[in-house]
Image (cartoon, rainbow, N blue to C red):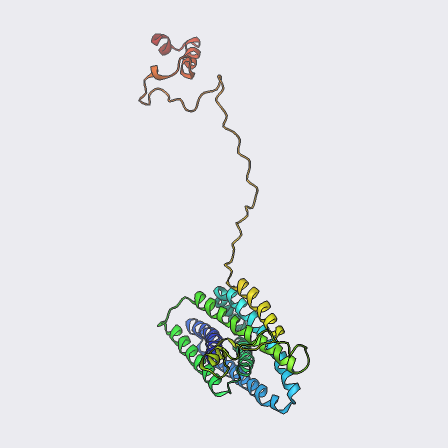
Length: 331
């Protein structure tokens, strides 16, 4: 139930944030007349997601056992791929999401009502379809019926809607970057279990070999029907007797994905537009050049403090030779 609650919370909060951004932007810019098309697109996306989930659940029951397992295993791989792409996409573009959505909304406002409906539908529909597919596979992987997993999903979605409303009203402020990092990491762990279970389905469909080759069997230590076995199964899709292929796929997905997802981003040093010119060594004053560090008379420093035959003496000699009376009298 916890895994499904996490899925509903994570996916629902993303959709809620999208709705909040769209609605708040229209209200702020005085375009309340465009709210009805936005809500129409959102309602259409929700209806399509529910229909997609119902088709997956009831349509698959008409298939043979092997076909069901083949479909379930294939859709598990698709669901995990979509969820993995989603968590990395949100980590990369979360800070620019608001500007991106507002830019799309400006373009839709310029086009017309149909574009507004399509903008809201695409923004929310992607999250809804991903949620329906991933929840369906997570429910199948737990083998715990449908009541508790669906209750967890609904509770997560309701929590996400409540948080979205509080965000819109300004009553709730949390560190969204840290929130999406933690929930994204937990979702990767859940996705690893769904992926391993999907490969088990493909083995049961006889599409992949190795169904009888067990990596280990700890069913006596962790009985599947015990409370802790049920807890592990419901949270991380733990199986006490997995095949070698399941364990291999689980490890090959979980370890590198978590490392890449949790690795801190590195900011490259900013390159200079033009190469810096090499610094020339300081040039020492030549004997025939005035020393810039000398202090001229009249600045509160006695003339006798200046070096003999310095620049001032040379100036006086030139003036005396030129016949300056003031300098001749001084000499």
